Amino acid sequence: MSTKYLMRLVIGICAAAMIAAFGCSRDTNAIRLGYLQNDLHHLPAFIALEKGFYENEGLEVSIGGIFRAGPEEMSAFAAGELDAGYVGLAPAATAALNGVADIIILAQVNVEGSAIVCSPDIASLAQLRDKTVAIPGHATMQDSLLQKGLRSQGLTPRMLRLIVLKPPEMLPALTSGTIDCFIAWEPYPAQALSSGAGKMVARSSALWKDHPCCVLIASDHFARENPEKTSKLIRAHRQACRFIAEHPEDALNIAVQYTGMPRETIRKAMEHIGYAPDIDRKKTSSFTDFLSDLHYLAPKIANERNLEFFNEH
Image 1: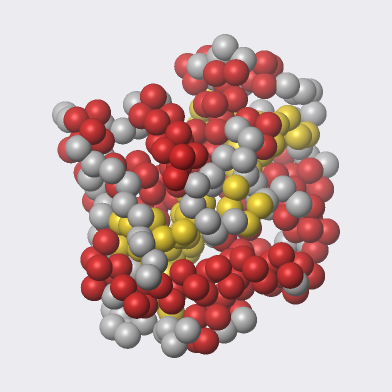
Image 2: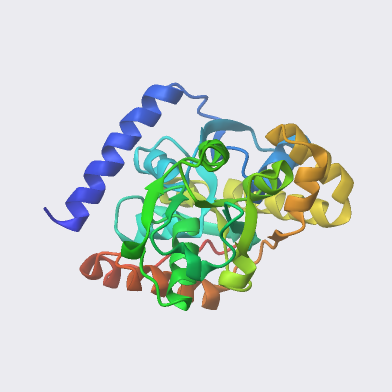
């Protein structure tokens, strides 16, 4: 079975599940926006919704889906169920370059902001050999960062027991001893540290300094048919990123509201996320080269495709 066929099959199955979960009806005037559950990387989306930045641009935005991992969200894009969304660069690039979802990158969202947390007896990446480590999904940002860290220690994924868990499931699994470590986006690492159940082993800043992380994307069809709305969406996103820098306490309040986690946990988590809407294409290219090196991109297809970026006017 070809890589392309297998990926399309998996995407199709996931997409059917997402359609069943969220329904197919829509207000044709509203932009269907997706983001990840409790993901502090996606705080600009929460702020734009709460502070009326979309409305200020004359946009009507509805929530098209709240997803537990990036590949699930890309399934919804492949099924035509989303117009725009906040998602990790790794799942977005993997889906786009493998030809399973037609999307355009509108802006960067953040840099860094993930971490590897382990049981107290594990102090370094070198000790991950033969351990059970949870990732949110294959070809996610966290999977890619873990593999970057493993390579720095001369380890490969085959030397571990990798399992897929959604971030809300990771802390209970760590507490019960089902897993030895997990890598997730904030605030889940901060939650584990605050509870005393986990020990910080490596932040993503140590795994890959200043790495691009999440991006704001749109479906190719939506962006081409609605260039003015797309530009306004980017403006609202940029305003939200500025709001975080200029009004940190207000941004913290909104982050607490959307995650439901304690204020001090969220405050500590936000210290390790850099919100930066400008795309660094050189770093983005370097990251997609790494995805190719991990064999997450089908060579023939990827060589015929490039990531597309929206040009603001």
